[in-house]
Image (cartoon, rainbow, N blue to C red; front, side, top):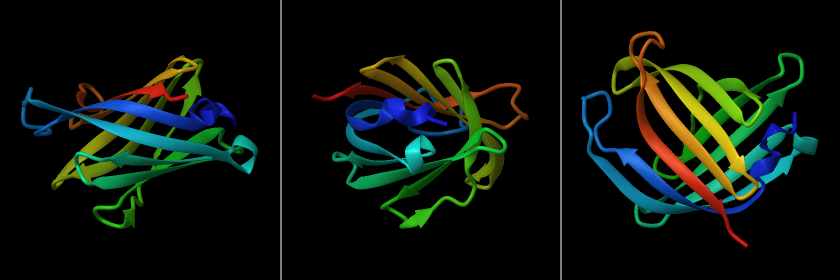
Amino acid sequence: MNDFDFFAGTWDAHNRYLVKRLAGSDEWEEFPSTSVASRHFDGAASFDEIHFPTRGYYGLTVRFYDPETRLWSIYWASSKTGKLDTVPCVGRFEGNVGEFYSDDVWEGTPIVCRFVWTVIDADHVRWEQAFSVDDRKTWEVNWVMDFTRTS
């Protein structure tokens, strides 16, 4: 249940964000962010607030571990909407890689959303988001964050 302990601390991140999702686009925006993450419930919960200074908003991620299912549920909120997503991405870690999935809707299109967390080492982590419109046969990666721990 301590899977997200690696993320506790302060991070700088380089973001790559696909400009048009599910449209065959290959145009990416790149921008910085900073994140402060903390662990709670003796490692069974993890929170982080992320600031996107050049985009003018904040995000908040809340993660909860269910000891019965041994699965994590990940929720997202944005200062742009002031709302917590009601559909969590759910999954687990196998070694240094965690995969999390949710059935959702993007701009009216039913999708499967996937988050992949990869712990590279103690000071470098990657998060990736992808959408599938064909029941997980193919994926379009649309957001990648490469985190570097700050001192």
